[in-house]
Amino acid sequence: MKLYGYYRSSAAYRVRIALNLKGIEYESIAVNLLAGEDQSGDYRAINPQGLVPVLEVDGRRLAQSMAILEYLEETRPEPPLLPADPLDRAELRALANIVACDIHPLNNLRVLNYLKVELQVKDEQRNAWYRHWIEQGFDALETRLDALGSRDYCFSDRPSLADVLLVPQVYNARRFRVDMSRYPRIERIEQHSLSLDAFARAVPERQPDAP
Ligand SMILES: N[C@@H](CCC(=O)N[C@@H](CS)C(=O)NCC(=O)O)C(=O)O
Image (cartoon, rainbow, N blue to C red; front, side, top):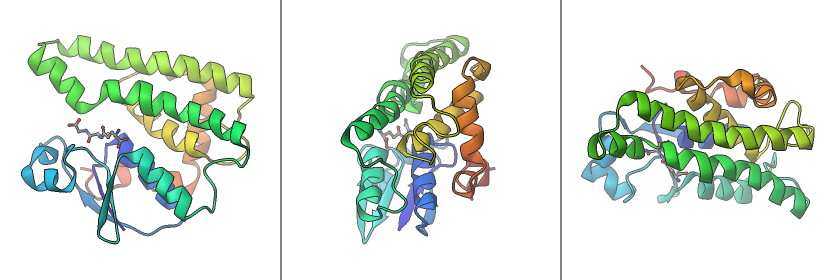
């Protein structure tokens, strides 16, 4: 498999964690988002949306990290990223979707660029925007994790899809100086997850394209 990604892309970071958890070898292909490589014709031929990640499997190119994660779960079910019980699955997916649907899309590079270039929003305001959507999502997540009694991981005693989504989002939160002391459960889950090799190998700083 080939993974088109960028070291600091949190959506690519999700896929790296899942590939590592499932013990799948892959080749990394860097697409430099800051240099605009995602907007180039060459990359548009790979993903017409111009977004990373893309996972190439047997010559087919899969886009959208959630679709990729589902594909990995369906084809390499061990270790599972989803629990067996349908209600538990729904609950866990709801945690993951707070990040995938309600935080991340509002803070994407193209959104930030649009705010800056088209709407001429100042850097300070853009950063406030970024933190606002993370804090809204993390407030809800922290409450939910509290209700679930989550300790080392979001759900039960093993890493799941929710942790795969959460840890990269915390990386973004730290970059933009969100006060993580407001979220003790999320912080604990992050720290615990990063103590696992599969998560630790996926961190942005350890990717071949990291500066
Ligand atoms: N929904 C997509 C989002 C992918 C995405 O937004 N990727 C970001 C990096 S985390 C990207 O490529 N951004 C480039 C841009 O916004 O121009 C997914 O989950 O794969």
